[in-house]
Amino acid sequence: MYEGPIQDLIDELAKQPGLGPKGAQRIAFHLLGVENNEIDRLIAALGRVRDDVTFCAECGNVSANRLCRICSDARRDATKICVVEEPKDVHAIERTKEFNGRYHVLGGALDPLSGIGPDQLRIRELLRRLANQEDGVDVTEIIVATDPNTEGEATATYLLRMLKDFPGLSVTRLASGLPMGGDLEFADELTLGRALSGRRVLA
Image (tube, rainbow, N blue to C red; front, side, top):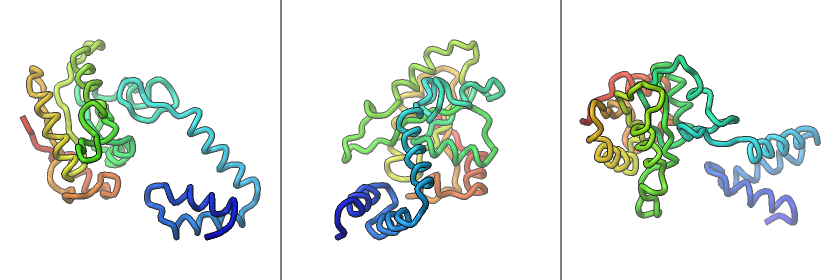
């Protein structure tokens, strides 16, 4: 245990995903040795994230404006919506350059043991989005791209139940190539690209 502000910083850093006490300690002591202007830039960047980053009113992706750059891009295929758990998954799929449709970010996956049910996710917003298509373009395919783990599979199954009665709508799931129990953000572009191009029909 260290004294005062340095221990406070270590404690706060250690709360972040992927950082344990050792990693937090390394970052804290690294920050002790950098120039003041680097600390100022870090503080300013954190402030901008807190104050300026919002979520897209259409898809739920992170955005600096009311609509994210993908939803506001008229060149994207509005007939296809790829449903993902988190904004980081949008970035992972965009890296493959295999998908030119739109997205819908759920904000997580079903996990009853952690108290996350359908009402905690943006499922209602997806159904409303499909029911109120105002631009004259009908959505013909929903690609379920939840993580290939227990929670992701449960979410995919639930979405299939919710979406099966929409006329003319095909519901697909990412194909094999992604390891069970893994996260989309850690998949390489080739594996994720093959999984996306070889997606299978659920209904």
